Length: 131
Image (cartoon, rainbow, N blue to C red):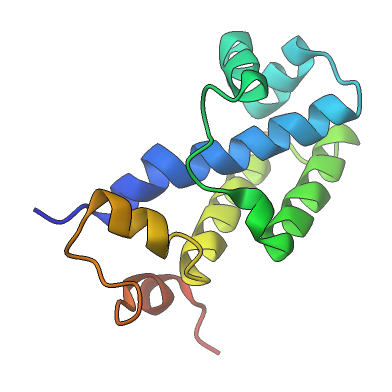
């Protein structure tokens, strides 16, 4: 059976985005325990992100537009301007934008051979805002 794009987002995309958020916050010398509190994750998960044990399937660095948006979000987190529900919304927006921009098609093909990245338009159809 085909892998749901929502399963793909939950298992691979969101952790990859959170990993880069953790790394960007760590670059600002924010202690891991504080990063965990700000992101609502465990300190051990912060450690796993930093060590590259989680959130490595999507090569976020290959997408400069996504990196830039993650840097903007991390700056707002560091300044205390983004937390709680508003932070969850921003992370989810990053996930949806990543899907809509077809940054996940190759990964989707790896886990589901029935997906053809050239002809598949599931994500742009579902996650692109209509004017």
